Length: 321
Image 1 (cartoon, rainbow, N blue to C red):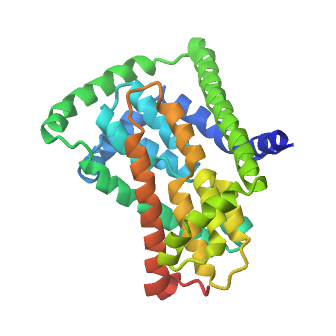
Image 2: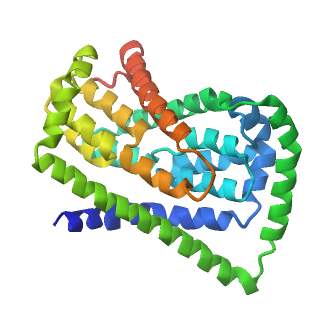
Image 3: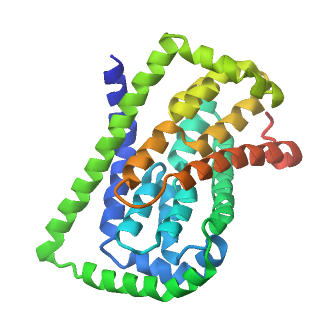
């Protein structure tokens, strides 16, 4: 039964939402889109995030598509040697984000029942992501290396794309086939994680282990003045995002702002399920998972702080809650 529920979630939500984006990004890697963005946005990306202009592509696609498209593109940039290991680690920390369809559609409209809240959550999610990117510009920063690498990455990008963009009708089928197969492999891998964590969450709930674990975080909730009713939902969201958000949205509490702030926190973190998906995607490269973990914790905390500030100090963001 649990297996069927997990598979249904993957088939109904994950597959149609992610597969087109995976195929599109694979196909775009054979075009001049990425080097074009590199030339156009390098003057912005380098001083702000300390990454080459090509880093704008995973950032934009990560925001549009959602987890884990950003990580997939960053891995592709490393495999193509477009970015150094350190630059990919900086990118990974802030480009793998939740998408607007999920934040506005699923969380805002379906779970919370307010489009304005969904849009506000999306804006804060993006602002927090940019903040993490600015903070991570100092990750293993080496100005001499960056100056020397400026020429080499441009040269590598030019050489690679000169060879990769010689696409004709004779090899178009081969390129399409590779793009589809690579995308299907990634989506199937994600499906495995969805099923696995659906089973884990159900086991924890049915065995009351989740309740026992939630008691352990009561002191933290008391310190933050958050009602204990949110403990199980918060823990569920840390393990698997969708289950946690669903639990939090159904808690009958008058102080509705807690629901929104904790939802913002969980959207920023993404959950252990997404973390392991990212770890699986980058495992074939030399990119470390450590900056991603630090980045998502920062993203979660900053998102919650931003929403708290906007909710309490700016009337336009109060949303009549």
